[in-house]
Amino acid sequence: MLFTAVTVAGLLFAAPPATAVQEINDAQIAAIVVTANQVDIDAGQLAADRGMNAEVKKFGQMMVTDHKGVNKAASDLVTKLKVTPEENETSRALKAGGDKNVASLKALKGAAFDKAYIDHEVAYHTQVLDALDKTLIPGAKNAELKALLVKVRPAFVAHLEHAKKIQSSLKTGN
Image (cartoon, rainbow, N blue to C red):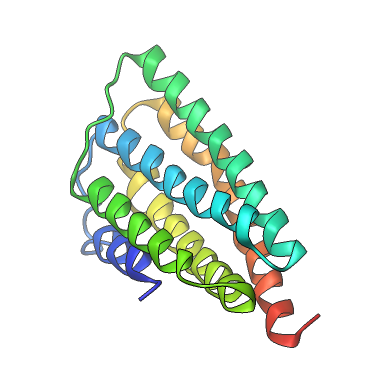
């Protein structure tokens, strides 16, 4: 199923009881951020290369460009802070789900590919925003890391809205 990465991420990023924020350290957050961005880079590259719809292709390329930028900013920051990203259950699940999504997308062509890619992008960006709001931003201890997460959040919102518009146009055939 194409939403495996999102489903796994949703389970792992699910909000803990209202009384506490999920315990996570800055090194784990860094690994999650880099992995989540790489998942979108990989799928975006595939969409830019194989998408049939011009808007899907452009969106895919935008995902590659924008998420590489976020990864560069995150990498520069963790280098500055001397933090080594620490793989964790969430980052490993994101990577596995991303790999599975790309494999599923590779089996599709034409309009079916476009629809599956955009549907996944809508669901994935929804989950990433949920993770930012409920786990990553509240869990970041370092002020610069927290500031970076807050700074990139509007781009994820914009990506979600853009993906929803493409999703809608694919349904109506415009």
